[in-house]
Image (cartoon, rainbow over all chains, first blue to last red; front, side):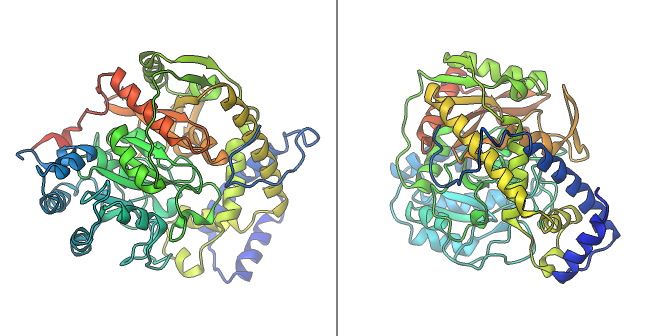
Length: 63
Length: 440
């Protein structure tokens, strides 16, 4: 987990008016680690070959 | 009639009521009685609407589902009940949800709420405000999720059909675990008002039935159009790795046997960036679903609460990255489906695990149940295309399924394919009855 993650997370939750305990933070850190792994995996896509394009998920995909 | 009407499938119930051999009022009362008598070990249908169901029947139009009892997942608002999404809270106010309107207009009678994994955030059914629900093939094993109550009740012959939802395989996975047919319809094929899945671009309603014909009846009502098709000749694409190679070998074998029995032409295909589909869904879905208010969080299980809280921490640039991947995968799948009619792979990598088994053993090693299941399931949610799980056999006494992904709006082809497999396997797997449901 990157340095300062817990402080950042606690600040976000405090701003949202949500009290979190130590058990919460342990689970959140675990889930966030999975998220960070997923996010890092997304960097594998070659952005030159696949530039950002808007998606309309209510329309059929086209090749 | 001498047999209990819920020992008939939904289509047989419809035919019997049409020809006057089964009185819809008797069907309803017998169904309510069976739910009361037999659901204790399953907890598939924790809320039953006796009065509301009788009122629906009294005014039911003579549509294709006239007088047929169904259950519906807790993600849909009903005129007399808010959608709670497997939590203790009224999350969407009571109203006529789009799915409810479609079912009512087809003549259906809603008899109860199908149990589900809490907040739709799990593939086991182990956690719910109504208590965990179980698999009728072995109540020590999970029914799948999040639409586990729908699959469990249909498999146990408590109800002929049910409506679930699917944001990450959540109709197809429980269908496979419980040995029934589960169809995820195309994204937005049903009006989304009053549907909790409206908060994501990955979710779609799901239709459950014991076989393809029963699921078709439910699905036709949901999408409000006929779904007849013919799948005797079909071109099937398979993505070997990881969908087939990283499953329990016996599970993959059941799928291979079903494809061989169907007699279709099968060839290997490649979907670019498939390995990133689950990551894209995780990032995007978390951002879309967001976090419940504090008073709701306080009433949730620790894991669901932590998932929701962690959604508050997602940096916006990650969503753009996820969308790039999603766009690339959608293009690739569209290209593959120009050359084949469906893409096929095992719905679940293993049979339903025990409740006390948080990991499943795959050829690649141990994996958390949800992670392994989502990997098999999310492609249809990322692209929005319809998908179906078809019962194709048993492993260790528990059902497993074959999943087919079809073209946009082509639910009919998937249902026809399921019917063809049933026919070519002599209905061995769709007519199998769990011991729990076999006694008179």
